[in-house]
Structure formats: C-alpha cells, structure tokens
Image (cartoon, rainbow over all chains, first blue to last red; front, side, top):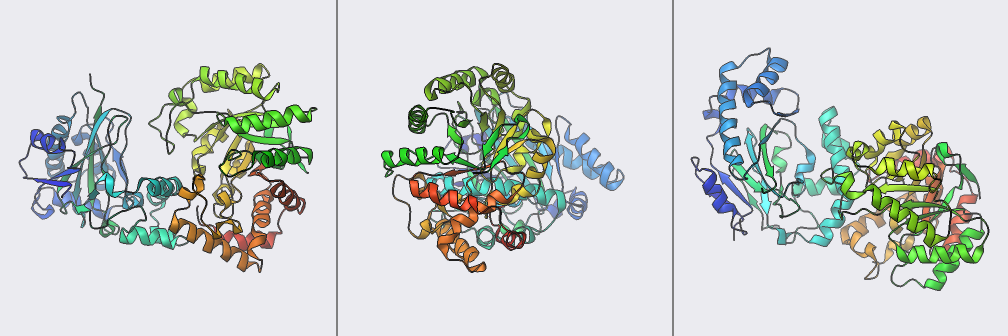
Length: 255
Length: 312
C-alpha cells in the first residue's frame, strides 16, 4: 500500500490536509509544471550555476529575499523572473500555512546538496503540529518516503547515534568548502556505499519506498513532541545536480 | 600514576579516570565490580566519572569511599537531563533539559550519597551550542562553585559531536569539556583540544576503547541486556572488528594488544587531562594501569595511527 498520495496541480490546502489526515499516507505530492515551462526558468538555471548556498528568508518576503540573492549574484538581474518565482512561493507558503492553524511559514531557498539528506530521517521542530513543503526545481530525483514500520527502530537508533553528528559535520563542510562528499568520506566507504545505494541496515524492506515525481511539490509530516514525522531521504541522483529547492516549514502549538 | 592539571581549576587528577558507566551492567558480578573500584582507587587513580542518575554506580562508589576512608576521589559528575532525547537537539531548551533547581538538588543529593564535601566537576551531557545563552544552568553552577560544592563547570559532548563544544570552550564560561576521543574518532585533536590548551580548559577523553570495539571483545556479539548488543548491530560489529584488526596488523601487533595501544593513544595528546575508561574487573584495572605506565606513544606510531580514523 502506497504511502504517497498524488494530487493535481490545482489542489488546495484542504485536499492536502484530507490526505495527510490518513495515517497510512506519509506525504502528498502535488503536480507542478516542468521547469522548462516555468516563466522563471532562466533565474533557476542561473542559480544552479552559482556556488551552492542556503538562504533562510527570516521574515523577508519572497520578493525581498530573491532581490537580495539577485543583487549579490546577478547584479540585480532577472527582475521579471524573480517576481514570478516570488509569487509562486507566496502561493505555496499560503497553502502550507493553511495546514497548521496559527503557523507563520518559515521559508528557505537552498542550492547546495546536503549529503545528510541521503540518509533516511525525519525533520523535527519543537512545536506540536508541523508540516514541511518541498519544491525542487531542476532536481533529477524526487524525495523518497517510507513508513515508520519499515524502519527497524533499534538499528536506526544505533545507526543515528553514530552517524548523526558525523552527517551534520559533513553537511557543514560541504556547504563551507564545496568539497565532494566522496572525497570527504573516502575513509568511510561502507557508509558512502549506503548513501549511494540507499541500502541502510535499518531498512526492513527496500521495496517499501516511494519516490515523489521529479519536480513535483511534496508535503510531509514533521516530527513534533506530539506527532511522528515522515521518514524520507533524497535520491543519489540529486548529488551532482541539486538544483534549487524551496523549503517551507509551518509549525505551531494549538491554541 | 601520573597526575595532570584539570585546566584552570588547578586540581591534580590522575591521567586515568575510573569510568563507572555500566558498573551495573547485566552479567557483571557486583562484588568483582566493587573490587575493581577499590583496586583502582588504591592504585593511584584519584578521579571517577559518574552519571548522577546511575544509582548502582553511586552506591558502589559510595561504599568504596566509606570503606577506604581518607581523601575522597575527585568526582566528575554528569548531570541528569530532565528531557529524554536520543540525540542532542537544539529544539530542547536548556531550561527544560537542565533547570537550575534540578541541578542544585541533584548535586546536593550526590554530595550526601557519596559522603564527599565537593564534586570536582558537574557537566551537562549531550551539549547543544544553543544552550550557552539559555536557561539558568550557568548561574546555578556558578553559585554551587562559589559555595564550594563543586570545583568546576563543564559540558560533555555527545559521541562524535566535537564541533558542539567549540563555542563553550572559547567562551570562558566552562572549566572542562568531556568528549569522545579514540583511534576511530580522532576529530578532537584537530580543533577542540588545541582550543582547550589555549583557554586552559580541562579535557576528559572518554570511550578510548570505543565501547569495547577496540579490543578482542568484539569477536563475539554482546549478550542480551548489554546496551552494546544493540549498538553494535551486525554490520557495525563486523566493520568495527575488521577495522580494529587492521589497526593491530598495521603495527604488527596481536589483537590482544589493541586495548593498551588505544588507551595510550588517548593519553598521548598533551591537551587531554584525563582518560575516562571503564574498569569493571580487577584485571581491567591492572591492564589499564600497565598501559598508562608505558606513557605516550612515539610520534611515528601516532602518525601511522592517524590513517585509521573512521568516525570523524
């Protein structure tokens, strides 16, 4: 039974909320037009060519944040494309915000590839109800999701006790230096192989993993003190072509 | 037993610290564990690392202190988090994990339980950098230090999480940091240990034998009930074993010689104040004392061992 529900491009927050209310559904994917058909494709292609970075909008509107990026990287170019992309981010932020009452969307734009995403994990926040929306642009592989009962909790706990701090350090080093992860972890071939193949010792049944369609928008549960998060990971295919990823997190404590 | 200075506190601690985690492990003979503690304290080891919540270890240590009389050992205490978490989490506020009132209560209780006047160190485990400016842990520990109930304030870093301690060491607010340092995880040598020297902060190196992974012990799975049985899941155990054998082979040593080599490796870094190592049997104590007596490893051996890093 699938853990991934597909919705049409015009799906709204109510559609997503209804599907995510089903405990068997770990994530929803919402169809999106391919990058080549998007009015902001030239901006995205330019971002893909720039050195990898992560920008947290931190209260800036998408328009303001994209203007900042354009000033720093492209001498302020791509005005029309920026407006178009900002409008789409605004739309998705509103959609995500409608999933959690009282939540203010936290938006980030990421163009570097965090190797830690290759390992199955759940996202976490301190609030009691939360979701995360991902919109990958120009990424060849879609996010993979699986159900919690497909993870051996004992082995997963032991694996992450050993690996989590090392993965955090690896992410930081890749962001800071841009060095290839194959070089940084050349002394850890078994762990590198697991990232490449997706064969981790804690996965019960490798066949029970579902991939979001490349380019599709997805929404998944974030772990909170009150709720379990969705186990997910990135595809190795994204390692050399991370594209641009819009990440929108909505989290709040019920009133 | 050589002594080293615990950073700016000036306390002289033995270069080996008696690690007590697992003193209550299933299958261990409590009488033998008590003998090991007594032998360690009688052989010049004057420092003990202890989780305040480990009642069995507290009980064994209290009895050893009472029976031996004289000067009590320096106790390096790991405080108990009020929030259960598997991994360090910036989403857990320091005020929730380590509220000042709970730190005071636990410290004062431990002083009574052990029958000592002062703890050498109280440290917050699974340290998150965000905690440096959160909660009331620091003002509470400063008060306890001023009252003479503790001598030093410290943080204990989660396994392999050396970067988490950099800001705390440089801040001047802590006197000591505890971290994992062994042949597989040599990351501490790169940045934090030199930083400790610069700021005169003590460094407690733990897990020098990687939970038994740097010993012949790993030839067989751990018995059920021992937490390491889960930690060393099959592929982890096999890889650890293969890497341990490779280390021994690279130096032309039998695998039996690995624990002594691993212990001397941890002792070889000049910024390491003391190495906390579990000693649950008298023969463990004797073997560790003998290894420490051999002193630091030669520079060329250390150079060859650098190529065996795995968990950093």
